Every structure is written in C-alpha cells, then in structure tokens.
Image 1 (cartoon, rainbow, N blue to C red):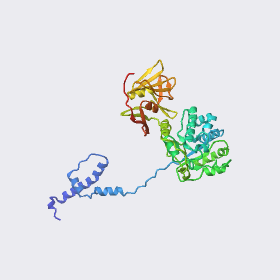
Image 2: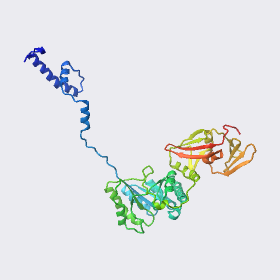
Image 3: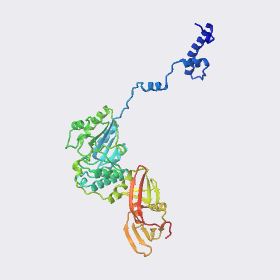
Image 4: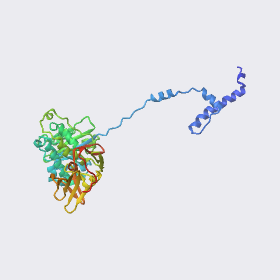
Length: 439
C-alpha cells in the first residue's frame, strides 16, 4: 500500500499508532482523577473518529432505566375515646392507660366535672386530651333546638376553664351527630370555633346495660379500611365491663402496629352525615343578630395569635393578640387604647368616675361604678338613651364590649369576619365622629 500521500513511512506510522494507543488509555484515567486536561491535536483527531452518543439518546437512556419505587409507609393511628366522665371509674381508666404508656381523649360532661374536678385535673396532667360532651346529656333538651345545645357547651366549657384554665374546642354530641345534628348545628359550632368529632369504631359498651367485656372487645377490634381508627368507649358510671376490656383492646392495637394518639382540632374530623330525618326537623333557627353576638366572637377563644382589625368608616386600625380578650361571648377591648387608635379623644372625670366620649352633637357617658351608658345631646342636654353594659376594670384599664362601644359611638351596621391571620370588625355605615375635640 502506498502511504506517501500521508507523508509517513512505516516506521513513523508505527510510532503514531503507539502514541494514539497511549492517549486513549491515559486520557480517561486523567478525567476520572479530576485532573485538568487539554486535548492535543492527536487526541482531537482520535476523539473525532469515536462514535458519540447524542444528547437525545442519553436522555432516552436515563428515562427508560428501570427503578424500584419505594412506597411511603403510612403510620396507622388509633384514638381511644371515653365519653360521659369523669366518674369513679375514670381513675381506673387512667391507671390502665398509664401502665400501657398510651394516651386517650376524654369527652366530659359538665355536671360530672363539677362533681369530680380532681379527675379532670389528673386527666390533663397525664397528657390526655379533653373534649366537651355538653352538661347533662339530655337528648330531649339538647336536640329540641340549637340554643340549649350551645348553652350546655358553654356551661361545660366554663366549668372546665374554672378548674384548669383550659377551654376545649373538641365537641362530641351525646349519642353522636347521626339523627341529631342538622346543618345548623354543624355550621354554627364550626363558626364558633369548635370541632365536632364522631367515631368510626363503636365498642358497643352503651348499647344496653352491662354489656360483657368479651362483646366490647369484639366490637372495638373490628378491622376497618382506614389508617385512623377512633374507638368509642365510656368511662361513666356503670361501665365496669369497659374497664375489664380495655387492656385487651390496647394490646390488640399494639400488636397490629398502631400508634396511639389524642384527637386535636387540627386534624380532619370524623363526622356522620346529616340524616334525612334531621333535615326535616322543624327547629327554631337562630337569628343573624344572635349568631353575630354569641357565635362568631366565640371563635376568638381558640384563635391564638390572631390580630383584631377594626375597619371603622374610612379608618382602619388593629389590636394585636393580647391587646383584646374574649369573655362571655363578647370581644372586650381596652377603652382608651381603642379610642386612641380610632383617633377619638376620651375624657376621664375622676370626681364622678365617668368616661366621656364626644360624637358630633352627642356625648357618650360611661359610669364606671354603675355600668350605665348614657348618650346625651350636647345642644339640648337631653337624654337620648341609657342602658347598662357589662364592663371590667382591671387595674387602671377599663375593658368594654367592642360591639356596644361601636354602636353607642354611632356605628350601627357592624359585621365580623375571620381568616387564618385576623379577625376583622367592619362598620359600613357610621355617623360622623368629630375627632380630637376637647369636651
């Protein structure tokens, strides 16, 4: 073969092949070791002759590679719940739970809390959750209409708060919501800041008197297609068989790998659907004014960290969490601070223990000692209205209900709304207030 066109003889050709071979061996090693490298002309020529994978083929190769996807393991959770306590049996339930190192959720009756306050305290101190189960469990009263149900929830809540300083937002309806709750019950309790909880496993320990322990165990350990199990049991009087069944029930769920936990208002609740019979009940419905006064402000009890925004006429200001409080279904605000934020001057008459606020030609006089609020016409000095309003004097600060304060300073159309960050109180119509005027 004539190689003169390459200007190479056989000796030079052998030398070139050897150089190419050494380059092909050394070059990949240098890259693997992370050493910087610049291609010489010979290497460039060799590499240009090597088959190259296109970028598209590389992507295709990666996308079609087989991988074994690992599915996340879902932790199964069981919530043991106990209704109708506390009673003489509650201490035994707490002992069993403590021995097994598991927690439960106790839906308590107000009248039982009043009778056994020390058991309520122990329940919370040992890390269990407490929910509201109304005051007296009377179906005839509770499901006649919404008002008595609401009143019993508040009555029990006050009992719990008096003993522990804690207000439960969890609510369980006596007998469950099925056949008892209509849309009004669900809607207004949610607006009031409460979370209604039913169950998905019924131990059957209240189906009749003295249900035997073995039957309770069988009912409480039924296999269901869910990773969250809420077991209904009772720790009220007459449920000694439940006490006998409880250790076996706990062991069953432990052996099945369940985690034990307490219910909270942050999780998605288990609730029964409204039945047709409940939908057709002709119950008296609460008025919008009653809802605005009692239900909506109540949610602030459980709205930690929310600020209170006041949108008064064209002015907007706010009170941070801790600068206002909720008591007896009312938003209470510090009078002078609130008026200062709204640009309205407040005058204090120390001699007569009166607060005076001017609004146009009218003056609001608040008599601290008697709780009487009087509106006078400054021009005629005639009485327009007088009524008693609940107030609180804490140190040097006078706390007054926000709704009444706005109403008596000329704001009649008042609405309250809430989102995740704030409460917003708006007045869409307001009489003119003369700001920063001395009396």
